Image (cartoon, rainbow, N blue to C red; front, side):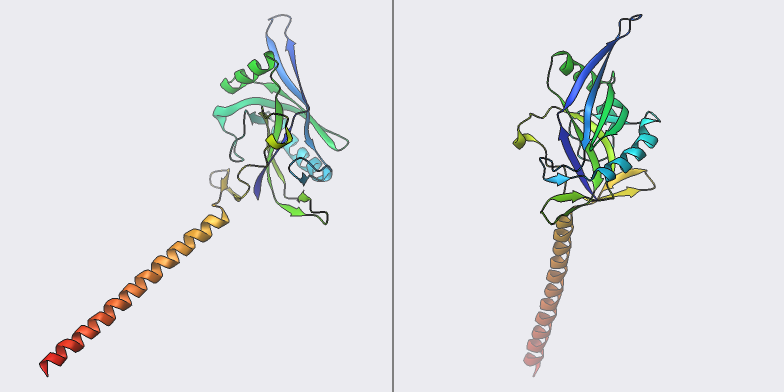
Length: 229
């Protein structure tokens, strides 16, 4: 499966103030995922696939308060604790859209996000997941049933169409390592092929070198035998 990321900027920011303590809590909310719609990256996510995956994510992560997200674009599906900025608290389907809400945490990255919000910096969200894609008859890349939502990250990409990400490490395959409990990136297929070719070429050179030594030894022996006659 490949790592897929999609950016959405239809996200609102809000704050809540505790009247007793005066402490301000920051939130973001809005559309986290969109189904049945060709996005800027030329991909389409069937809404039914997103709904099924949202249900799993809701049960396994949101309800257990483990739905952590990061600031920026990580290069893999695993959550990096030192980059966590928020906790997703809600997610629901509204038509073909999937809206959510997240609380900004008091982590180093979370404090950066809070500053962005206080200074009215435009921020968006980016879904991060694993899955395969296949082209439709219309040439649109459709995300398949194996889609696995990793999280929803906070990003600061500009709104220009050419500035949106097309996915990160899209030529890397991932597998789930039972021993470590993490998604692990396999080497890109092209890299594996190059490494195999390199090994084969080295072996061929070794064989040719050995043949050359054998032939040279035989010719020398013939020369020595000729001198004896």
